[in-house]
Length: 512
Image 1 (cartoon, rainbow, N blue to C red):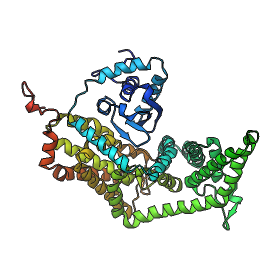
Image 2 (image 1 turned 180 degrees about the vertical axis):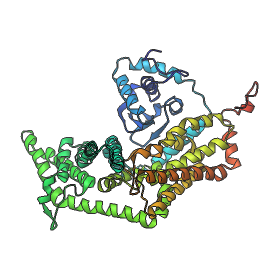
Image 3 (image 1 turned 45 degrees about the vertical axis):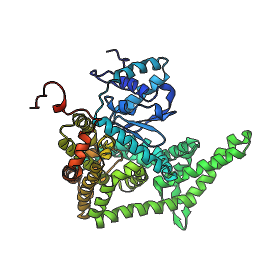
Image 4 (image 1 turned 120 degrees about the vertical axis):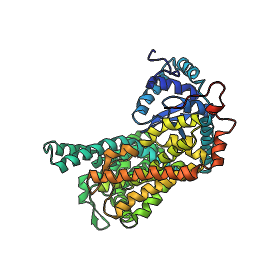
């Protein structure tokens, strides 16, 4: 197959072919207004949402699911893959022959099989659309903007977190003492300057000049602030952390906009950046750093108190409620909290507990797979989505299986609550489990684990939590998530693929 040929069923899919197949299914080049990606999703701005073929997108090889958050249409492709597909997608948009390539891809996906999985996919899309209409609030818009500031930082957090883990492991084993300081420097440098990147992204998100946002936020980590006194106390470099940097850059953006709206062009080029840095910087030094430092300290103290005194209960609540938070988009509010904890303590103790929600989801999907053994289409969907779910990419299972079915979504939350309670219990006993970066979960979080008991103990507790989430999610779904009526309604609906026994022709052989 030529490298530019779109994917057709039965042929291996490449980033180029996947991108070519995606383009017509989202309405063609004229319908795409923006392209971006995060760790796992291709994020598209669309001119006309109605031109998207959701069912064909979900049936496309390589696509793990689709999510809509109100401002962008997101195609879940998985870590690693999404960057290459995005690059190919952007190249197709820029190419003169993108339209012809897209037509070939549409023909290749026109015969995608329809079955119960498609019915559930449509139900999931309807649920998401209704949820979006009910929750199109200023709060959710603000949370999306916060996510847009911090999500681009996740690759660096992951890379530095893994390097930090390697450095810590070598230190504990007393191996390679000559290279350990170099690894520690590599892992710490980004965190030492993260305020600058937060300031840059904040200004960019809110319509300011990114470099001015970074310049204003840089004062937060400048060593010379130790000579400045605010509220009777000398400031410390890094005081306020990412929260102070976000506030400083946000203030700088509003100062910049105010100046540009009032100053003539001849003065704007000189006075606007000067006043932005001067006014925002002074307010940051004498107000924002101190206030943000108090808030950051309170967040760290609250997280530690929560887990050391009410760990099992806190883990149960957090693990049980995280899937609904993801569904509502409210989980984005936790990103600055995770980053603050990593900045303060070297790891976030909340992420491993929240990751248990994904374990409950995997267990619930496995139970659906076992119970609905006659539904071959749905079982195929679950088989293709489970590997991603094990690595922490849960959207295909949430929106394609458990949420449309209804009750399995609740029993998945039960599994997440059990796993969270397991990890929280050990936190009460003195074995805290943390993650040195945000983004990955599931099995992908193992290289990023950290805790006071060492990596082996931390990994054992985290693995025990995952196993608990799998088992409880499976058992709760198997016995309570699919009663006979639900199973018959799904498997016997007129819209689904026939059972093997109902097909014309010879009965399929049983698997060995």
